[in-house]
Length: 149
Image 1 (spheres, rainbow, N blue to C red):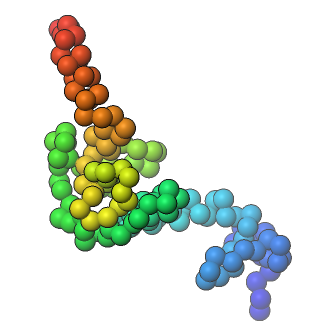
Image 2: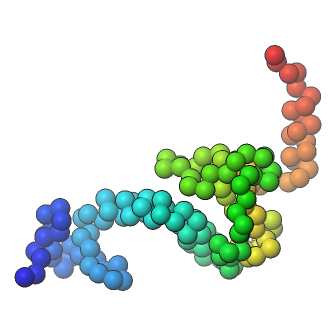
């Protein structure tokens, strides 16, 4: 017997179904089911999920993408920049400072072996688009400030 409704009771009509490449799904339930499936995938394989997101971003920006998890292993336990312990499972509610992040040494080149380093999201954010001279000027300024006790 053919199903006439989805698990939430929506009618299985041709205009309410979409094909994901393997099976038909309810279009009305997709806004609920897809985020749940993404969270499940992220918990099961955080680096597989992260590399998928990097691959999509590289494609959108027109950058080359050829790294695999094996290219990043052994995954560091501590951030090489700030020395904090890295969190490889990320946060459920957005980025967290100790989350592991992939940094490109040369931003014009894509995600290729030899051009990437794993570091904390905080370190990656700090160096995101500042030049070495700008960062040096910032640290010199901060050291000149009075140190409140």
